[in-house]
Image 1 (cartoon, rainbow, N blue to C red):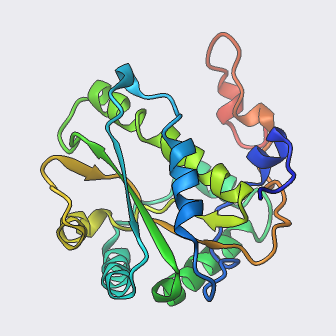
Image 2: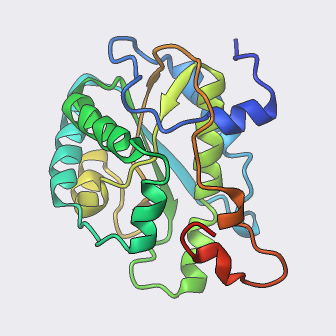
Length: 224
């Protein structure tokens, strides 16, 4: 069964779920397979369908992957925030602290998450041009995003993370992924959610992001 949500409700309430993952309830393989079936209906550059999904549910393998996640998280490079970043992050008071509280909770409980979904795409972009990167990422991101609302509709929650990046090669070795051919694009914890009553996020005003015909400088100025 799926949740009774309109398309607009589904798109506006598929949240990055960290604190409301049910860590004690296994996720049936059939539900994950349904989500993957929907994910691969996403658009793909030149119909190449280079996507792959590595799902980890076996206990020992989950422990190994969780260990890599935590060590990679500690090595993740932190880029300085711009003034604009800080303004957006704190537009709604308390939102940033809630995000970091969720990050800390997920890290503390990553070993208990019942399933990990690690999407990959054929073709590395480590030293590729922007054009090649755009084509590659544009062929995996739509599929992963399709996976996430499909999961939400089935009472599952997940969150896109890139914590695997610093130790991607080690993660590939544990998963028997051919690193030179496959780029591990993300690391998604997956679990049933504690409740299904998710709400739209509070965002900065539309006027800050919408441009007509040409770039409008006022949209990139604080408070305009």
